[in-house]
Image (cartoon, rainbow, N blue to C red; front, side, top):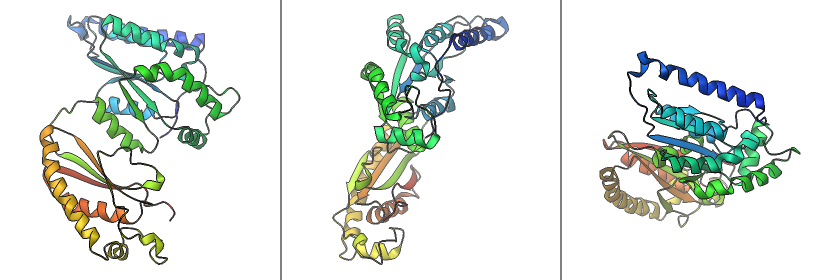
Length: 329
């Protein structure tokens, strides 16, 4: 996930530009040709905030893809203005998402009070808060070579510490908090869709069978998690260590006592029972994670078997993902 957007502290010129944006937004909905006399009805306003580098741009794309009116890097005062605008007669905006974060400088400090005003006015809104651990945020800033918006001295760690203090009240009042360390951009999109967007149409249950290594951190997306570290570990065989669970020699070694076969049979029985019930319940996406020590051998072999077992079912859309298979042994 990338960190993008202006990192400059807003100036009076930027505030003026925001006011001009609001004025331009008003014009189309004042035109009787467009409004037909209909009064605007804002049904959902999602306020996206959280740590710089935690994935707000990715989150914004989720809402944009499903037709939300989206504005990035919006000062809190403008959130109030937009919500009022979308309630005016003739507004055609029913769903909107705005991102507001410490890039707004001193303006950002007013976000907490703006949320209070939204609640008091009865404006339907939800707050999505994105966070990640310090090491992940530092790595993301190093990758993009951008300065942290609160790091006056250039220290990303100092900027994160200042941001954590500033964000604490907002995290406490968030409707949904998502940790993004350990999540790919695609996984983050699925997580946000699952938690914040209604399932609007019936379709196959999307099932991801994911392998991972416990030593590289937990599978944060998992709905069901199985530990296969009891199976013989190919890592300790020099000839097998560079291979993965995609190689038959690794599968044969892990299954030398027949336990891999037996374990899979028991997983099949459980999943045969559970999957139809998730479909009936209307669940849109299910992540079944299988973990071994390094995420390269045993868990990969089992995730592949599960994928083959369920791939041809009409009520499922199956994906197999190997989180750690490309890591060095």
